[in-house]
Length: 299
Image (tube, rainbow, N blue to C red; front, side, top):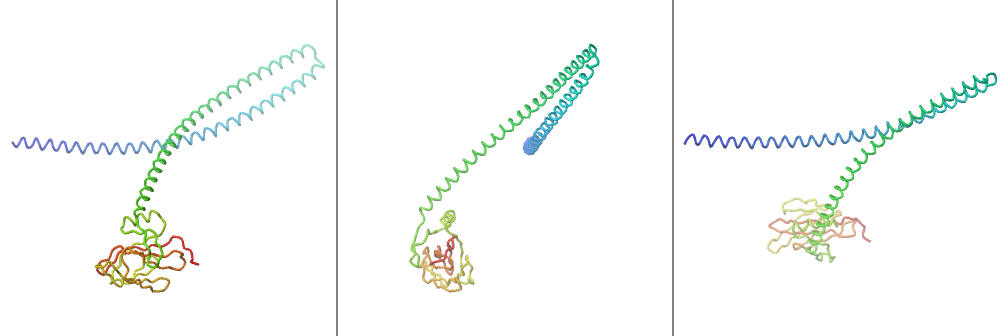
């Protein structure tokens, strides 16, 4: 029985070692794949540099060839003109021998012209071959880039679809939010009664929102550009009394209820600030402050 136990333990250890080996092989494969991607990226960059250098070098060769050809033709033309002028002068004193020399000179000049034309054709063919190779390489690169662009377009369409879906969810949630009359008789914006509603309001982006929780024993707490102090909390009737310091003025908001927009005007704003308390417990309240994003002075 001890042998069976040892054999079982050996099988388990071999299986454990096999898993470790497989994981090591997968890790090495991942590293090799990443290294391959880096190598392909470097190689692509080098290929782009080689194409640019080849195009520049080819253009330089063409320019040099044109200059050399023009210079050679001008020299040859000048040499022929000089030879003809010399022949004309010799003809005056020599008859048959001069004519033979002229024919030989012309034949030599014609032969040199044909040789020059052959060399020019050969060089032009070489340049045309290089340009064709460059064009093929450029077309391949363009095809690859086009494929990448198509992939990016597909990703953009996916993002658009996701954004549209998110916007639809926001609009659906916003329809469930409530509006209420504020304590100053002004119809408030949308009211959030929980964290989910508040996140929806933030996503709409119409106003600024500052969450807070205040204890009656706390010192005045800064929320946005206001200072808030809890004076009384009545959880049985879901009521509270709060002191608000704004524009160096103290305002007491007395016996307000939860989810009731407690409104006040602050200088530099045409729309009111709104304090909404969502929860009242013993000596403690939790809620948020809503402020307008655009500051416009009231008239």
